Length: 407
Image (tube, rainbow, N blue to C red; front, side, top):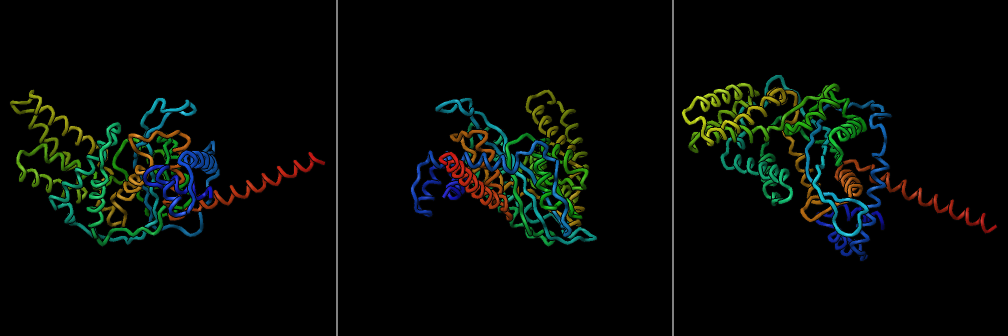
């Protein structure tokens, strides 16, 4: 019964109250919301300490198995959740937003090729409506992260992004064989160590072709540099985030709709062909033209230059991770859509302007949910087997002590 309560408390898409309704309808027993909260928080803390409480996260890593993985990928992204001060009495004390992180580790099946198996820009990236929806969806999600105090409903936009990505039926696209999920609210350094350990546990380091995919965020880049660079993982910038930036650049440079689309198509073709430096050079030229214009000192022109500089810096910081033809030849994925979908599933449960978590509870809840979302949820099953055995043993010891005391 306790296992059912915790499962409902973690997997509910709304709240503990929603978990109570599910238990009443499906498990046919009624239980108070406060008790579900209490049980779930306590067990989540136990789960976190059991599997992630080691002092040195890089010690005693499992030995590699004999059967090696051929292709693997790791994609990382971040979400948001609110925490409050623990043991501070009734009410919400010192509420604040923190970043949650999700890692998607996958075993893939794909073929290598001597030539680029898909040299032409996909139709989805040539469709005005599809590109616009995709870019607006990414912007809405990112603005929601930056301004979480006033969260917007972005579920529909995220679905649009995912639909655009799913519609791309390319022959080189790798097939997912197994998926392992990890989530946490730790800082980037600790999260990176935990993700590294998870990668070793599932033997992904043995893969001959390995991809590490992110949206270009500096913290996620540091995780790669500290943990995965020396193991030969190929860093890749998510193609859709790159499309968003060049789309914005085209809007800033051009003054009519037709010119904007032509400029976007020009940049998108260079991007797909793995030529980000060509885009950077053209942005340099555009920035110089604005600086040499007669209206250079106007706020309008200054804003344009500032935005173009931001885009150029983003491309410069990530240009070594944009060799997409080479990645397609190796049969590696070039999109982080899988981890973005996972972040959405985490956020549905833990993110809201009206949800305030104890830090210890939300850490465990995220880790349990990650285990349940994995194809291999052995941690979840093993935890309950061990917990039941420990309770039985504790009860036996307690009864023996009582008998000895009575004697």
